[in-house]
Length: 195
Image 1 (tube, rainbow, N blue to C red):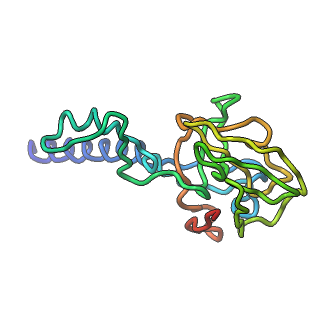
Image 2: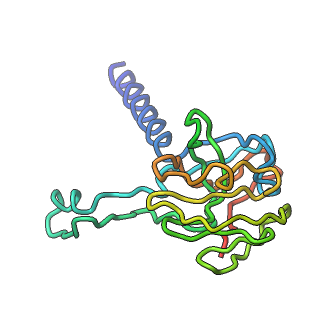
């Protein structure tokens, strides 16, 4: 009987550990609003990778790792870095109790402008094959902050995004959307990126 009780405790502890681990690595979100149509529609459920943009202070980590050297300002990105075209979930800069989902258009230091609906990053027109809804809008050049992203919704006429309230600080990013999993007939892995 003791071995059975011990086994139940061990299995319960392992299950609790796995739940905590999964909660720190991925999270699901419900999409609200039309700003990312047609990629997401209201009510879609998505899985967000919370470790996708993990950044490690290399110099600090190198102090604890024998035979590893790092420059003072060096950063390691073990799971990759954010890229233009990534779809992210983030805390809205104006009210961090609200989460938004948008697409990264401008990286730190990029110059972004819009001419009659066409987006230019660093004076180059970007290809946006995912767009179905655009505006013939023109916006002056904006330089993205050093630790921030410029984000836009795919449904430009119905999106509240960086055009209205500015950049998203890196620390507001929760993670990168990887999968739409619900409803089942809308299951898809994300594959589009702005180039």
